[in-house]
Length: 248
Image (cartoon, rainbow, N blue to C red):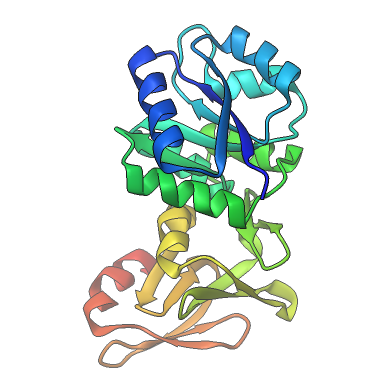
């Protein structure tokens, strides 16, 4: 298989050199064709080399990684973001289905990210970038969208259309308005982390529900929730008190 051509962008020289060396030594599927410390230089390199993937630092002086993407306008490559841990930025990256690496970057995390890239390369559509920007704005609304990985690629869903999500081994089953169901390649824990700010709650190990769709709560040891689509979901006993505080 032909190697994926990569451009690395990071304003910190030590981080840039470290990432390049790790890719050369431990990621044979990647060919590093260029590196850049300045976003302006990176723009020129991307336009000239037309890489398959860029490793992009989020926080850079004068021009952030996100603003640099705005300057590009069109995207013919995949992106793996690199960042010192910033929960706010990471949450936005995850909701738009991009991959990311937190500094200091471990060899195992880097190899896993490259393996996912080789296996599941996704096109960078304007809609994915728009979802990323929307998430970074800090405004949380069920009108927002989420990028959901499926067997065919990505599907963009309005959060308000997700009634509940059920764990299914290494997959998750989404129950949507209009009676539609989807089986997606993402764990329930991942959805929980992303959707918690949007009035979702994990009432059971196997169930994450949209609190806006609760029709009735039935008392019991843990109790049960009846949702507006008629589905009945058990509430775990250990979750009962916290759950009742959220809905009363």
